[in-house]
Image 1 (tube, rainbow, N blue to C red):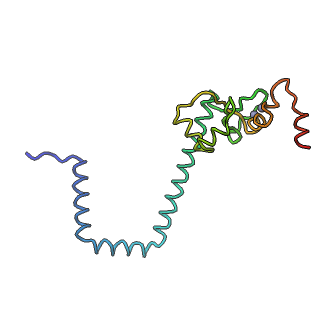
Image 2: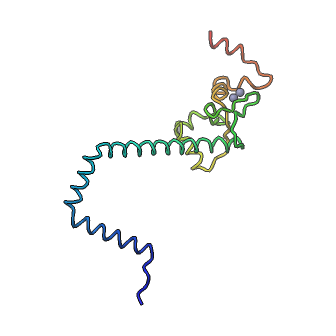
Image 3: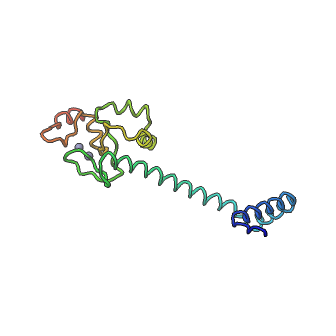
Length: 164
Ligand SMILES: [Zn+2]
Ligand SMILES: [Zn+2]
């Protein structure tokens, strides 16, 4: 008795047959393709455009996820926030990673900025010594050595001198 062909085997057989037919009828296949493109002039254009949009979207989501993941990890929260006391920043767009011991610039030079940096954190299994700060607090810390939000700190004199 002959064994029943599985659906996988059937698919393979039909594919092989179709390929054999195409190989034998190359001229005809080419003519058909030409005809199809002539009748559908936008075909390759829209196809390319749609793909490009899909790739761009996937890329963007992937990058945003990487960034969100790192911010969530260092905050220990689903909804990342600026970890400076006295700052209430929750908007993802304003949040960044702060090198707690300083040396952030050196480190950034090594691992890059932007999405490359976020990927670095994931690839290196979230090393310790980092926290989430908003850009304001992060810059203030770099500028004054401490964020003006810190209780009991009054940096207004320095700020006024620097601006003068
Ligand atoms: Zn802040
Ligand atoms: Zn602050």
